[in-house]
Image (cartoon, rainbow, N blue to C red; front, side, top):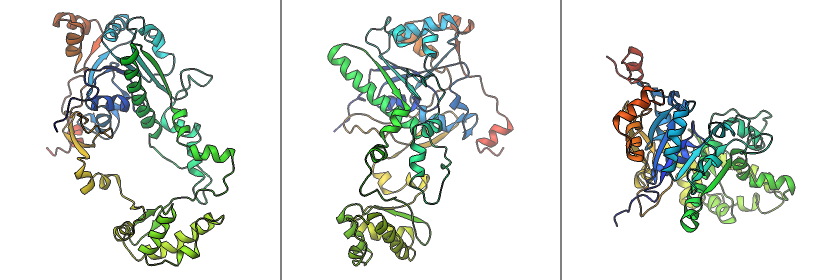
Length: 409
């Protein structure tokens, strides 16, 4: 069956977000067919300068922002604010992740914009929410991981460690952006039914607290049987992880490795669960050390128990399962082609795939202002000359960026 157009085809989004908390959400909307216009300052989203880079372009930025169009305006210029307000009138959704109060200071807060577009859907993503004593604090994902309790919750599962783990992941950003996208989709459905717009307030701290359900409840009601730690079991050449959580999983594991006696030796349905779990993992490691990770994984999976070898990210993006689902796609950003995972939002009967381009800063100034507002070339040139519109400066080829791009001469 031929797929229909993307589920969000025809939806116009003005994207005022930067870095990750926000941009990934609008990227998912672009994957589903929305026309997403990234509104950037004259210097561009700060992630444009993030490594890894080649020929001056960030592949990190490209993965999170592919499929979006770009216009660049100076929001400190009153003429730029008036231009944006006109674009708002033609939009369905505005998404922003400035620190609370910044957009209102520009005259672009929700109350300002709904005067121009009554059924507008306006989504804000921030560290602590739009109101409250902590609302104006600056926040990036590592700050939120610490503030939300997430880092200490992770630490509580580590043996012989008293200091929170180092990390550079952006879990809070990606989760907040994804939930923002879900909330926007719900608001679009509501608007179809009622004709009403909506204001959405996504706080990254609340997002992270919601993934700590067990930890939050265990603090209130001491668990009779605490959860075991699911950690690495060493093999000849690496590590695997197993989760014999249910009685059947445990039975499948014991029989797969030819140790059915473990079922009686280390029962997991008693108050000695944690002690028996540790003993079981210790005995299992004696067996796994006789096998490679791939061998151990194959044997245990064949027996029916959940198991996986530890894979690096590149390895996880290749293999029969990834190929079967077309799980990797190629995009292009002007410095060349590179691979990214396909969209995690799979709609099987309509188009849902990352668009294969990454826009340069201000690349769509003319297109958007002409198609949305009907401005002619002379009017657009006037806006550029008056300091309202900006475009990426032309790059000159240097020895350093040739080397970055892998060009030898």
